[in-house]
Image (cartoon, rainbow, N blue to C red):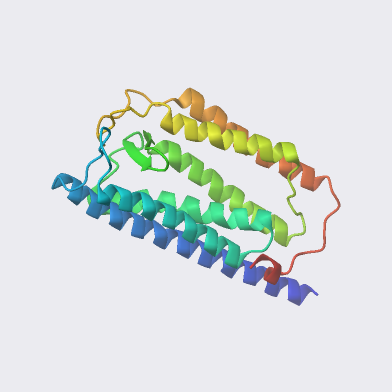
Length: 235
């Protein structure tokens, strides 16, 4: 039994390692694409068109973002079973993708200059704008909670959120998204960022999401421990 538990633990470690590798490599691909996009923008080939139809390159970038999310969902569904483990896998990949995107972008072109440098974070369904620090905080929370959830499943402390946990977490996520989009100018051209970021909106949203997860953990801790999950049940 003890030998089997060690084997299962090692399998979960390798699952975590390969999940991390996938997230980090996605970060490099994202950074490489943005290097090309920056060059196209400098040449005048890529521009936001607030008063007209977006160009083919901008539409292609929006579709690429959607495809990236599809890749994350596909890998999460293939490597885990059950809603919570799949969400944990997706959170880890998304978070590492985002954090290492900025790491590689800094190494490649020196951007961002500081953690408070503004950036275009996302384009679906409209531009998300904010200082780099904000999405990195979200991503760090996703990675930490994701790895914790996977290890909790392995140890038999399954996290099964109640309905209000889901509602609070979703509400917090929507508030975070709102903080990124509420100040987007109607005539955004790619460089005319808002004068300030709505930290007073962002931080309560992030706090609500974390509070929902911590409350779900406490709910799981109050229940009797389930039999330890086999790694094959996680991935």
